[in-house]
Length: 170
Image (cartoon, rainbow, N blue to C red):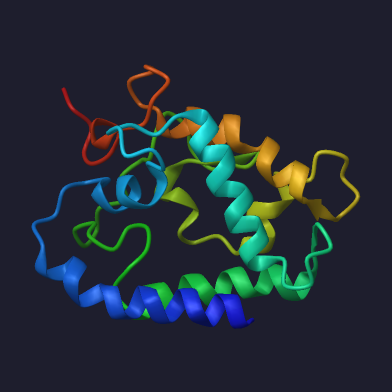
C-alpha cells in the first residue's frame, strides 16, 4: 500500500502541471512508457513497464496478485480520476472513443473500447489468467503485453506513438 500511496501522491501533485499544458492525445502515455525517450514505445518497453506495474500492486512481492491487491488497482484508478488524471481524462463528454483496433477485454488482457475505464480490475484480470486458476502471476500479466500492445497500435507499425491516440484519423 505504501508504493500505491507514493505513486498516487506523485500523480496528484503532477495533476496541476499536466492540466496546465496543451493536450496532445497520448502525451502522458509517452512520457511514462517511452523508457528510452526515442519518441516511440516498443513491445519490450511495454513488457518492462507492465512488469513494473505488477510489482507496484504486488504488495507482498510473492509474484501473484491477491484479491486485495487487485482491489488496490481499482482504488488507484479512482484516485487518478479524482485527481483529474488517468485514462480518458481528456475525453470530451459523451465521447466513448475506441482505443486501438478492438473492443472489450479478451484473452490476454486486451482492453479496447473505452480502455477498460468502466471495468473493475478483477474483470480485467480474468482475461490475463491463462491457466484459469484464478491467480494472476507476474508472467501472466507481462505475457498479456503483446495483445495489449496490438490493441493500441492503431496503425500497425509495431511502435506506439502519439499517432496511435486520439480520434481516428481519416
